[in-house]
Length: 579
Image 1 (cartoon, rainbow, N blue to C red):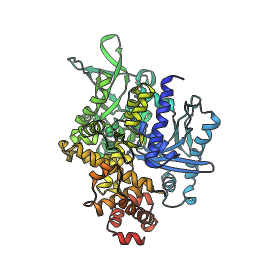
Image 2 (image 1 turned 135 degrees about the horizontal axis):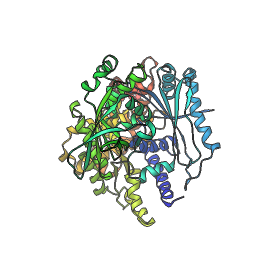
Image 3 (image 1 turned 180 degrees about the vertical axis):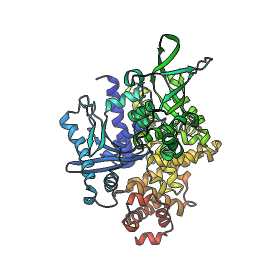
Image 4 (image 1 turned 120 degrees about the vertical axis):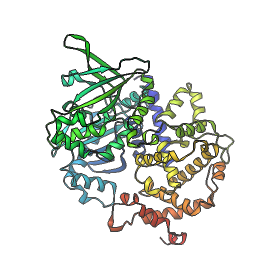
């Protein structure tokens, strides 16, 4: 086992324990699942999921999501096996197979009506019922297996369960390490057109050269595009525009053209804009001057995801003849791989500008986050009572920064100093930031939608913030809100913790905004005892409120509704004491 993997295993375990400590979730597999999921989400390998922790005899589920982009209706199920062993050990079949089978059993039983035996309002009830209700419409179910062990022996074939395709996706510590050490935020999609599809794409190269990129114009057969989308799905779509594909789905006019006038598709449609890291060519016939692309490395569609999904939908769902459908494509090949993460979102933003998409909607790599990151590296927090040592709050703008910086510290002594300067419990991510701020801004129903959806909503608000206001006082106030959030989180010990925490914080903000001294909380690095007393009252009331939804509605869905918040918001302290 290489030393880099050993070091990563230690850092990863520390990271999970640090996050668990900050959330008061010691020994929780939910925290472990969330940390691995965070890496994979950043890599574009999975969409937003809801975390849950459900385990019964023969059944297990640690997360789920439902996707419907108009072309696919898919379900993602997540199951985890945490060993907590460093260096990582090999996971044998006798260990991993039962875990995956428990998730598969959850699926099979859900298709047969498992929800009838589950408690209404729970996450497991929600997804089990969804699977059962929509089983005729589901195209694919993806089962993700997360582990901090090494799984060299796992090779799972796709299954057909009641007519639904089931695929398996294994993420062990070695694969996670490869992703991190490659300095890429995602696993690239490499398409060998010649080998896999027995074709190539003739192209017209831009007439002048430069040091940054090359650009090619191509005409892509609709059948080829549909086959590629069937193979890679949403991985083809640049991550920051996937949310728009999910929202916009299949375009009716595009579909109408495919069904009624497929030969006119090229004339009517604007086509695709895509990026790649590298392409390989082959000669067309014996004319060496005419080249055709046979391999595309790190292929991403940055504009035209809706077109791609619509063609696939017509092909798959409508059984349309798409042999006459052709799509024009502009393919930009970025010469320096180091510039991919910088240039691709910009190309994506410009390509989608016709839809009035704001920069903040596209990516978190913007001045707001960079400025907050810089402040977190510069500003020392005051020493807490009983200590003389100051420390810093580490804002992880990009996934893995904390481990990267610690790894670069070098010696064990320097790594220990890093831990003292940046305690694990003072690490916070983009999604954590969005929870702190949205909770204090009295948007608990938005926070309750889940980390990624809440972050997307938070991103939309960034254009209203003047960058010159992101100063040390803004940072102090932000950390004070983080301290309030974390304090509440440690006090909550019941189910629906995430919802109770955000509702409690929102109520405190609504009722006690003027009397809350955020600067004092920053200076003390703690909330006053009087505030803790109030928190405990509000926490109990929040639990009572959210767990009694109208008409026996699903509790987590009820928490996402504004009326749930307004009903709780308008309660006075006397009412809360009575709950």
